[in-house]
Each structure stands twice: as structure tokens, then as C-alpha cells.
Image 1 (cartoon, rainbow over the protein chains, first blue to last red):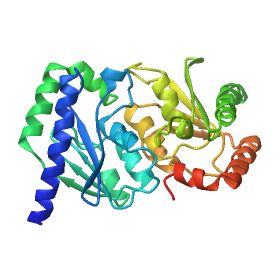
Image 2: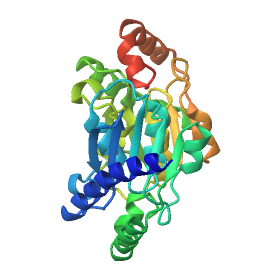
Image 3: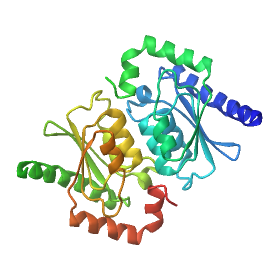
Length: 151
Length: 151
């Protein structure tokens, strides 16, 4: 269990690095990595603003960046924030068996839907990420509500 | 009701044109249009093969092509095939209230999930589309199963 937690924290750090990269680009600070057998297959971050693309959530960007890998068995999707229905839909459709989220304080996401569909969901509940997202939402409220389709 | 059906058939023809465009490009023949107040906001088709992008389903391509429209109230998403969980997830997250599908014979999709989330789903159940998709699946079986995450 502790070993698992150390592994999850290691890959979550990579997702956090992506979130910060997005913020540096003027984007929404949400990052993601896709891992298989202890190897990072791809990285991604939210690019709504950078690409003017409403669907370019961090997880979508990350799965896209992995390319046409065909099968997603044994993969784990890390995201700094609990996935929304769009990203959870991708997880369910492509059979990604496990999702590790950094926090769900700022956005409940589609955790129940993922679990109903048999996806294992782990929430690391990290204060660093809660604070980062909370500050972003406070200072970019309209962009945030646009991103989650709640304008 | 007849007027509605005529309207749906008119916009489905535009989605079918997109599906055929995709097929002509060597892609998977699934097309989509997003409509608001009787006006086509955007068109799209599956571009998995063309863009080497596993997430570029027709509906995702169509919603992306509409750009950052902010609110999706009063929109209708047309697709030649019943949307999968990825595309249904986008519909639910962004609050698209209605989906019109051309058929669901070749792919049951996420109709129940959409309806559970309050989305109105209409299935036109068109023989032309069943036949087109069936022929594609018969002749491109691996690509089809890759596209729906069932390899």
C-alpha cells in the first residue's frame, strides 16, 4: 500500500509538472500522464485556451498524445483533478482500468460514473493541488465555468 | 412530429455527407453536425486514421470545430451512429440537450447513459446508414474494434 502510494505520488508529480506547464502557457492548470507497467506513455495538459479547443482537457490531450496504442489494459491515467464526464467517458470507452486523481475538492467530476463502470478510482486528495486549483478558479472564474460546461 | 422528422432528416443528410467525406479520405465513415436554432454551427467526421488520433471521433471533431461557443443550450448534436461513452461524456459535460443518431444497429453506444443524464435521444434507424457501417465493419474489422476500444 505504501509502495503503491509512493508510485502514485511519483507519477502525480509528473502530472503536476504538466499542470504548471499549462499555467505558464496562460492555460488552465490541469495535467495528466498515462502510465503502463511503470513507464510514462504520454503527458498532457488542458489546452482549451492555447488551442481554442473546448474539448482539449488534460486527460484528452494526454490520451491523444499516446497515439493509437490500441489496447489500454494495464494503463493508469493520472490527473491533477478528478476527471469530468468527457474524460471519464474516454476512460470507460477505451477500457482504462484505473484512474488516480490529485484532488476532487474543487470539482467532484465523474467519480461515481467511473466506479459504476468498473474503473478503480484513487483520490490522493493533495492540499497543494486543492490550493492551486482554488486560486485559479478564484482568479479565472469565467474560464473555469466555460471549461466544465457550466456557463 | 412530421415537421420534426423532416428537420432531423435534413440535418442527418449533412452528417451523412461528413461520413462520406471521411470515407473518401480513407477514414471511418461516421459524420456529425451541431445545430442551433436551425443553423449548422459545425461539421465533423471521424479522423482516427487521418490524424492518427484515437479520440477524434466524429462528434468530438464536430464539437471541436464549433470552437469555444461557451453555452450549448438549444443545440442538437446529429451523428450517423449512436454516440459512444467518450462522445456521450462530452454531450453530458457540456450540457447538449438533444442527440439525433442515424442508427444503433451496428453499435449500441451510450444511449442509456445519455438518457439517465436527461439528454433526449432520437434514433432515426436509417437502413442506408446501417448498410454503410456494416460494410465498413466487415471490411475493416480491426480498425473498427480499435475505434471503439474493443481490440
